[in-house]
Amino acid sequence: MRIGIPKETFPEEKRIALAPAGVNSLVKAGHSVFIQTDAGIGSHFTDEDYRKVGANIVYTAEEVFQRAEMITKIAPLTEPESNLLEDEQIVFSFMHLAVGKKNIIEKLLKKKNIAIAYELIEKNDHLPILHSMSEIAGQLAIQVGERYLGSDSPIGRGILMSGITGVAPAAVVIVGAGVVGFNAAYAAYSKGAHVIVLDKDLRRLRRVESEISKNITTVAANQYTLARGAKFADLLIGAVQIKAEKTPNIITEEMVKSMKKGAVIVDVSIDQGGCVETSRPTTLSEPIFIQHNVIHYCVPNMPALVSRTATYGLTNASIEYILEIADNGLSNALLGDTGLAKGVCTYNGFVSNENIAEAFNLEFRRLHIFSNN
Image (tube, rainbow, N blue to C red; front, side, top):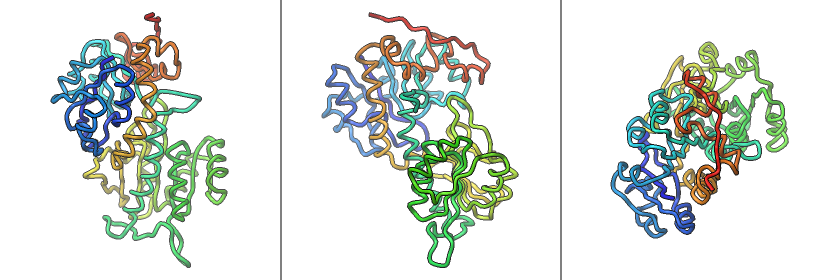
């Protein structure tokens, strides 16, 4: 199979879909890989690094799309990228179509593209590719939150995360105890913060207590406890994710208004719309804004801050699926792996994910796949 890796065009996206080790695995298996020149430079991988493992370096995104049967990416498709898609081409990437633009979905349908979303692929009741990026995002949420709690940030409260003898540590309130929330709780607790985790799922809260510490306060999430948590927080981490759906605004504007002056919100859910009503996407170069005297950090591609680690993590999680499709053909790969099939959003001109179809009032058809053997 011919696999294409274009240079990412999303603002300040420094990751690349595959590290050289992943490309090497594909080439050794007999597949061809076409990479746009300098696509790996943001993760400190050179064109020569990719040439050494057998990749073909091409000079434009247009050539990558024209030569490839499958495109592997990081960021969701942009409108210019969607115009480059070839008919019936496979696109393997983070998609976030539920909060995307309808005209991009319509282009995928018109060209009968097979859009497979990293964030929807399942394995043993978890999301293996999303998991790797969520681990990073959870830890980074504490790092960036700690930075903006300092006195050198706009209206920063000047708080040391760990506190000192006789001075209380920062109050870190984490909304959601999934992979992002768990990793954020671990990072915050390791720094000595006073950590409070809220979630509706008591099993997740028990995991936080059993695998991190009983000294972390766990609270069943509801409107009352969320309001109290927001008011108490020096740093609030939004870590809510609903598969293939826009994240609901469970932290309301009224709750934000009640927060301490100079408190910090890191809304990790922003790539799915955000779980804080006052959130809006920001960028790595301009990551914050202030509203109601609260600092908001809402960068959708936060793992790009550690692009090399993130690229390795993504490669480790995605390469088995890319090889599965390349080695066996798309139909056989989907037939043989129901978890991979759950990642398919568009197929043969129809939306194959019910939540996405409902969000945009498009026709939904269940995935019907036949072996091509």
